[in-house]
Image 1 (cartoon, rainbow, N blue to C red):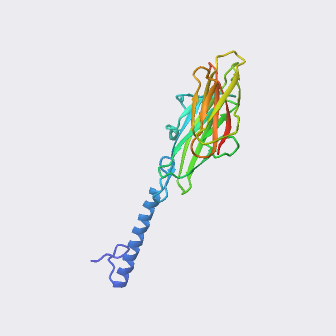
Image 2: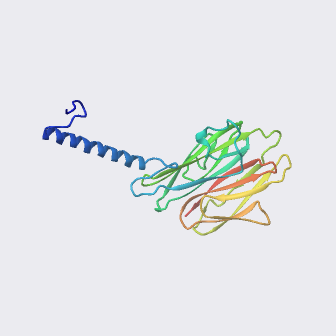
Image 3: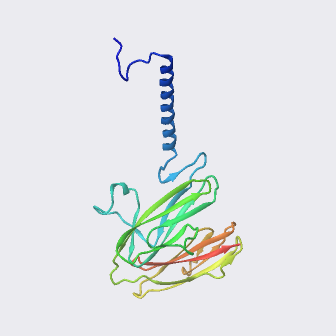
Length: 253
């Protein structure tokens, strides 16, 4: 006996052709779904066609890495770095990115207390300050000009530093522009109200910074060959790990 219902064999040629067409359509949909899944987010990045998404990592200057306690994070956050800094201190977050296709990159920062100089600047260096005790998520999305995007995130936990005060930092850069490959002296000054010993750190979004071994409050910035704005950061840190950071912009032209 031949069964009836949806599993019954198709008798007429017309019905057999319709069934075959429906099967082909279903297989095409399945294949398209696989393609879209392969092009979706993986490790925080998207890739379009043969374009390769940028690669990026985040580093923090002026904060200490910590191991989260019980209940500090959700299971999905296990791989997300956590650092800590005193409330009211300022730290520097740098996004190190590269694009294997050589595409120009755009940086977009998010997070309460995150600041770039000037505001909303396309720079891979930002400062972070939070006056209260809390945990803040900082993200940097890096995109190329062909639709490739990658994003990296880090959490900063700010804590009560008691009576300790972060150093009071002064940092300016002059002149505000240099020629490609030219050297520019940098100088920072800081005062600590608690008389703690102060250490200085300098970094730049592009180019090379070499700190003066004899006077660590000074450094020399060598401009890159490419023109455009460069963000330079100075960080002053006391013996109790409280930091102050300031940014300055130099135009290479």
